[in-house]
Picture (tube, rainbow, N blue to C red):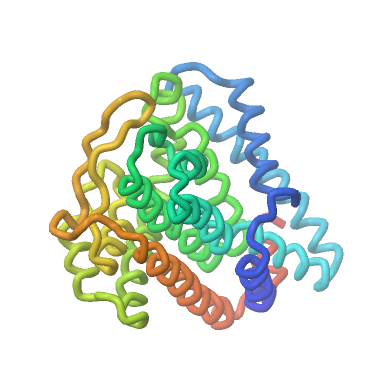
Length: 321
């Protein structure tokens, strides 16, 4: 059964995170995306479509090879492959550790370091952000990446097994590399951005609901989370990002959103939780508690879903075999 390798892979992610000196399939995927971009880039939508198909097709071929080897190697090899792919596909611990670097720099009054660390996590320009804006940005990052890096991978693992998890990571990584509204990518990256929007439609809303539920379990304001979600979840330019952000803003009773500079252009995003105060130092620890709470709750749902599915490990590994 896939449920037990999943459980091991999930707890490996909680304990180990993503050590920077370890090999990681997402880094290999980044190299593959860059390779196909160099070969196929043209400032046109059709070129972006060919690029997306080339990356997805290459990954499917590689996945087929890995799953075929695992299938022939027997249950222990299958279990090891499943465990590693689950571990590599999740980002609960790494999201905590990377966001903590920003918060630690703010706590140490090192604004320049906080801006530098934040620039590794967001696409907005961070060089002139005051401390309050840095803290707002890091809470938004935790909310959005809770969906992209934790809930969505588990959702697609549950829906489509390991191939679903891997192909979601492919689409999400392509969006993070080329799905930008700037001169280079506004046409070429459009397909990657739209596919990512479609794939995250359900997980983003599921994440928002789980944040509201977890807020109640942690003694935070679940009623305000639901209210802010209903009022502001749909207001952001992104069809998905506003949902987990609004739920988090309500649960913590803070104001998120607002204007930001992206690729030299001021973007006036609406405020989320406009009546709430700006985030303070203590709100980050509450956001981390929500991060782990939602992650664990989604993991429980996934584990029992995999158990109840009754699908053998070979079947879930071998969708293409």
